Length: 182
Image (cartoon, rainbow, N blue to C red; front, side, top):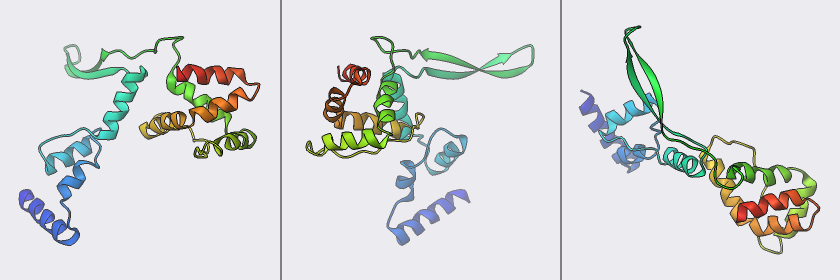
């Protein structure tokens, strides 16, 4: 019965919206919850990783801020039950050079430009360079989109940020920015 209903839903979606629901669903689900895996099992036998989740893991591993871990079931004879044991497959850790997290270093300029005074001074530098004027971001460290956006903004505005910090007395922020660029 389920097989027949899936065929009917596919025909209805194709006729009404001119789309294949299987193709659309495959790229919009998350593979991190049991309910999502259950949906994938009904739609397709192939479980594909959610691209954003995969990208988040890659960024975390490359930057050294996440461990690659694996959860295994181990039989506990004393309790007669299965216990979950998390094993670290590839340890994360700090990057070289002073063990400073790159993402944390990129937070500092963002925090600095929350003030309207500093933001206006930066805009004066960005305008002649034809750089986009960027408002400070609300900190959402757990989201990969936020991390990607922070990296992209820092790359795009690197010259403007460097010029700003060179024109002020805030040498610690310039040092931080130079460490990011090297």
